[in-house]
Amino acid sequence: MIIQKLLFYVLPRVDDELAMWIREIREFDSDELAHQAMSSIKLKKFHCQGGSVYSLYPGCNTDTIVELIVALQTISDYLDNLCDRTEVKEERAFRQLHLAFTEALEPDNNMSDYYLYYPLKEDGGYLNKLVNKCRLCIKILPSYNLVKEHTVRLGRLYSDLQVYKHLPLDIREKKVMEWSIPYLKDYDGISSWEFAAAAGSTLAIFMLFAIASDDKCSGQDIAKILEAYFPWVCGLHILLDYYIDLKEDKEWGDLNFVSYYSNMEECESRLKLFIRNAIEGISKLDNSIFHLTVIQGLLALYLSDPKAEYGKQAAISRRLVKSGGSMANFLWRMCWYLRKKGVV
Image (cartoon, rainbow, N blue to C red):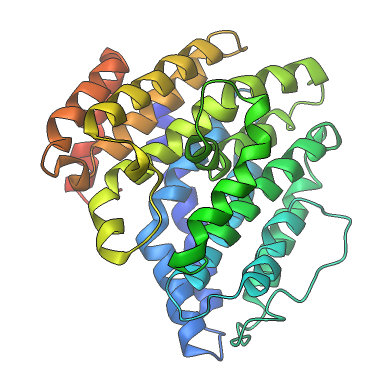
């Protein structure tokens, strides 16, 4: 039922939302900003498609959560391009830009000048409109006051990582490691780069949006979700993303946390650990089948990408899918077919 509604209702709604934002890009005065905004949507559309599954969490207002997830993820992908694919490498410029991400989660705060230290600014109000869209959706969620502290904390972790990981090659690794080390005392058994990977995921934020749709959600519900999602589900999400981008990131000179494993055998072992711990964690949650479907969907979506078939990764990818169970294998085959048809 989840898969059917995702394919035939939610994904078309995602397309509608993205089409609306593409129309906004036509108002840009800066050709470079327009190019980065357009490419962030066209090349990273699957981030919105995957995240939108949380709009199907039981009790959600699906339309509101789709709009919110698409807007926040579009902010994320656009800022990633502004930091990653231009000549700007200043920390203060990146930090100012990423105030858009955290302020999107704080509907009652004033909005900053996000381009203050960035040389290009003429986006026709695009970034402000995305932030406002998030805020309008958030104000509809009856229990957002219960999750706000956590979404903002996760948003700040996400933003910190994005700032440091896009700094020049000679300093970014040191910055990321120094930033992550103080947090490790709270998360046994993971490395600095695995923590950083978890911080780079938006899935826990999306899940908090979903549960905030329920006017009966409790602090205990929220705590259980956070324990399951961070670092395990979130870490798995971004490690898979880096796993399929390993070759590409090496060519671009981009930071890739999977490259810190000593070899591909260790990489496979650690990814399987994240899969096991993620599945164990979500088994304790309400609607555990929903969360399990999300994990299996992550494996299917990322490991059906042609980039997961490069060299030794082909055999590893098959084993990782298998470790997610028979449904992960079914979803992997479905994603492979949908990629062939150009749906994802």
